[in-house]
Image (cartoon, rainbow, N blue to C red):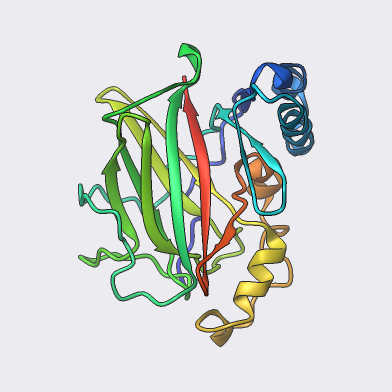
Length: 245
């Protein structure tokens, strides 16, 4: 079974900077709030953004609104990053699992949340059994370059669990040769329990609390959790705005 124990714990940085004009008060509070309060501050900012038509935000299937400009906390690349430079949108290969379309948008927060085009974005994750592709295998790994709107889309699957960690998708943004931002995206625990009850995930006994057992998720997960919406007959689609300095 794989393990991410070597992954550095996220360095404490300013997590949230902007969610439209209406969200600045709550977001400023998030900068100095204890880690366990970050998720609550993010929710307050989202609520403020939803009340202002001019605020930059995206609606989820549940009606929640996510901030449109997020300064991402660093979580490190972990032990399973491989620089394959394999440019592709569909990273599934032969892996089975619940389909997921992942839309990512890269913006520069210090430049008024300006979308960044021409930026490489790497994604890598475990398969339904909690295994990463290593030793020449390339499944569930890929790189794309953002378009003018700062966007890329990956076709993947919902990852399985392993090693006591919250299920996650790694990503790395490389705006230039001197800097990078690497972190992780998580999933709502209720959705994970529903997905893990079906094939091919149900071949293993899923943890009762896939996220709650991970201290890193408790610290930073609420600010990095996707809100997938049903897409097609058996899959989901989720989006996230990655803010870099």
